[in-house]
Length: 244
Image 1 (cartoon, rainbow, N blue to C red):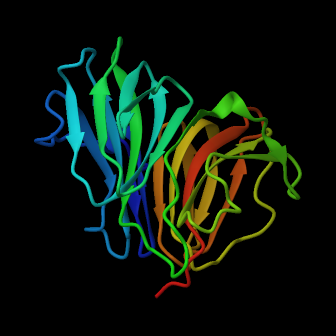
Image 2 (cartoon, rainbow, N blue to C red):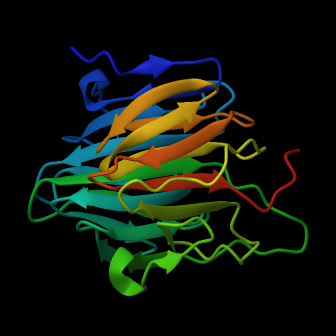
């Protein structure tokens, strides 16, 4: 049994040993781990880890009314966006706005996919963003002001039509965030590689590949990678809206 999973006043750390798979009627054959949903107040999004057996007979349509982001972790799955099929191999991603039909299906091999779901927050004068599909290797990681930290944006952070960002943050060995952050935006963080230590609301936790962290608004947070491994994580953050 894992002794690393934890629940604080403003965060939750979920490790693979804490996973409790469930099933959804619209995704037959798929196993779903609910890493966070709005039942964990004050979260305003859901993030699921989905395992799809191979074959078109697994998975299915996803009800309309929400925007979605999918990121391939292992194997292969397929997401259909408004009639377009996108292969979700490792590192592939896709975004679907809430007015586009979406379906998630099995591929040629068992696939593991991160699926983010949330209600779109419109802003006066702005249209909804279009569907997006790509791969983490389509563009290089860019250096940041923090030494040893490199970043790759999967959605355009300069487009105010998007109400959230999805970013890959890669840390060299013994690198980390350059300060303890406290901000209005909430986070969903999935460790895609390596290990390190996260400070969450004054508590310190060892984190490893496949761990997930939910951070509520204004949760004090900081991270440093292990000095012999480095680390990488996929980070959700709500943006371009004023909090009301």
